[in-house]
Length: 253
Image 1 (cartoon, rainbow, N blue to C red):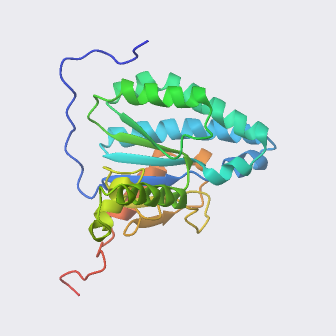
Image 2 (cartoon, rainbow, N blue to C red; image 1 turned 30 degrees about the vertical axis):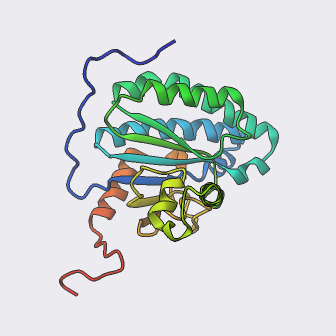
Image 3 (cartoon, rainbow, N blue to C red; image 1 turned 120 degrees about the vertical axis):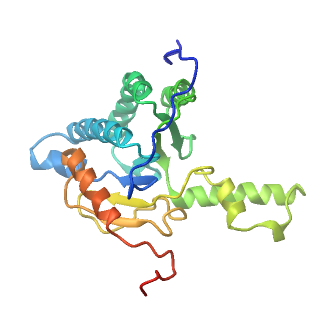
């Protein structure tokens, strides 16, 4: 069943606010701690975190953000208990189906980055259906990092490049940063301008290592289930007040 509402022309993207980053990436941390602090099972934290994600996605779309990338499930997360993994996969299924009309209403496009191998077939199916249903939208791109690890992504890119070299399609001397970028999961996406991590942890956790070379970092002690649109606005306001040098100097220096 096609969930895309018919329209003759794609909706147009409104102008971006001054000081607004093009691309925000978020490490959504703290679901388990939020649940534990309330004496609740971890899956309750994950479900509450999914509701937080829904609110933040809609808020960012209203603010005309170009792209929002959410770190949802890492390759390392397969080490968690099987019951918790099954609950997470069920949340993905429910979210992808239930939120398609909402994302359509908000003119959101959808992408997924990460390895498909190992993901349940029904999750992969709903990912593909969501991508297809929202493909003609022109507003914010929502990118979900599922079964994702940045090192794995770089390894996969190197393998793809090596195959092209072995096939005689690419000279080793032609391999540069742009060539590597074209073979990453994130090919065609702008690099993140702002990386937000909730729950106060001071680490990157194998997330977009290549892409965040010049991203501004923002860490908040707020646990992800408690993260609100006001918290997002605070992070964006902090970003707007920073001076980005990209390794150089500004005129006053």
